[in-house]
Length: 210
Image 1 (cartoon, rainbow, N blue to C red):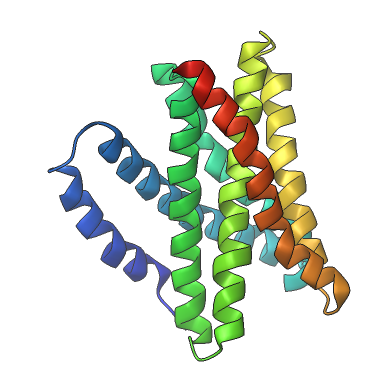
Image 2: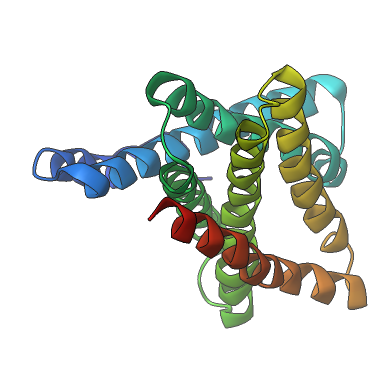
């Protein structure tokens, strides 16, 4: 048994102190990182509650419930930042990267403390597959929101469409890795491939903003 709240406090306190001595882009990233960790804890609470209340098995919860809850929790601070400050496209992507990184690292810390760090294979999967997946899914959401805003289709339908993209990617990953065999290897490699593909539109977006 682990105490996720205690782990969050242990990681968050140094970051809060660091906020006092940082400015600009560094402070923005640290803030996004902290929000990502908070989103991870809230998503775990909500997914666990829905899974227990509905009597859904852990595997089905991971495939059908967790992707929707986790991506929605990651989206909320991103939307708040978007509506409050109206950032540029690259700044929105940077905030999404901070949220996804905080979410991934906090989740990995909890799982490693629960499962142990003795298996290098498990550690590599947590880092290269699961961790990258959380970043890629919210990056896809952020890039989707940038395109929705660019084409002046920024509405509830456009936001839900971008959210559906990240949920689909997350759910597909969980589905592929849920069973051993070839499909699991495809799932493990999917986040890295997606990260490479998303880097191209990000570079184009950044060059347009310069």
